[in-house]
Length: 299
Image (cartoon, rainbow, N blue to C red):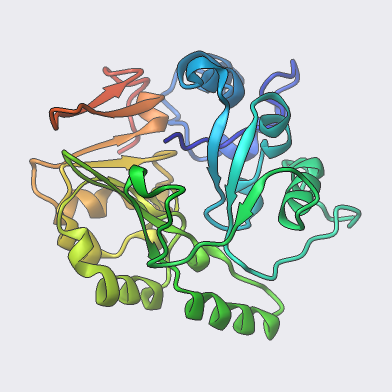
């Protein structure tokens, strides 16, 4: 299981666009500029996958789009072209975008949305499916992955709400996935943020949270993805923040506040690539690309 977020200009000499992603993320005490940080510490997703994950060149068996926001689709076209994707999970949302619109965000490549639309409308050879809470078929039964959110009814409700909004919101349609392992659970809550969504998770899947050992912090570790009742219910051994400190929007102090000193909290911004390994014997370990940290975090 690999969580990747691509930066469309990562391989280009001109890295001026990186400022959008790293603004307020790098401490003023950091010796690296944004450009130096990017080229030294950001792993190009395709190359990383090929060198470290793609065992035997079989490609990606399952690509899970947690929800249809462009920061979760960035790099899809390149990934699909260079590494074969077989199965594609997606919620049955009703989001549409025009790649010809004048205000298309410069930081994203419209080709990624075009490729996604082809996959979504079955114009490719991908096995495209829309599983929801409680569904588990033979295609992933051996993986023991549970979908804890959203339910079909919830997706239908959110689609109706978005139809009546000028500013559509899709974060709470995020898949909340639990990988069940012999060492305990690993929870991937996507960009879940609203209290209603978290309350539904606690009500209908609360028992599933109690053996979670690794939590990937919701919404990239932002405070609007932090829901203390759910975090306390899990009481994980590890919390992984997929980007890092975000000044006033960062929830790392909140995780520190409610979790015991036994919980270890790591950010990819500070430690680079973070790899979780579970052995057949039930041992769970974390491997940090930069175990000593890249630079001092701001106070």
